[in-house]
Image 1: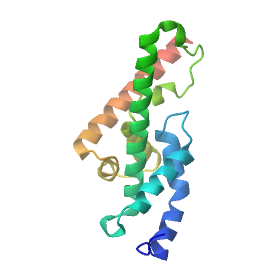
Image 2: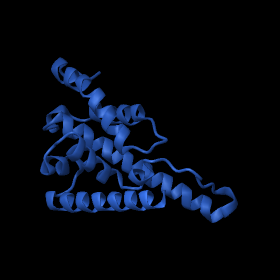
Image 3: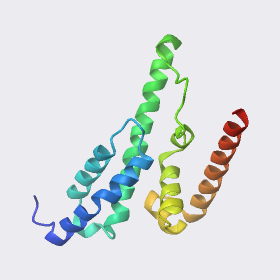
Length: 159
């Protein structure tokens, strides 16, 4: 371990593990372990120069969002490649999860929903955490809520 990380900074990082894990469980793909995202994020944090990190919590969350976004992109590329091989290889879930609609949202938007609607953070702070401007975050939240609401109405009408 580099001498540049003080005991206080390491203690603060340890304190962030559980909240960051909950956050990663919400925004990460359902088939990716939240602990893997958090550990990858912590690795990146420990490699960074501590003096460049203004606020450790949002910094760690931003890394988790970026990692989840990259994982989603990799998965989409793989799915497209399999699709080009033929439809016989693609399976479809007959009974999709109740969370399937949430998983269709981009990780940044899921992160916004979690931070604002679950943890009660102000939109501006949540937007900064995920790397968006506050007006764009408000619009993304509005669209996501509208989409989820319409999906729930469709599901309820079908029952």
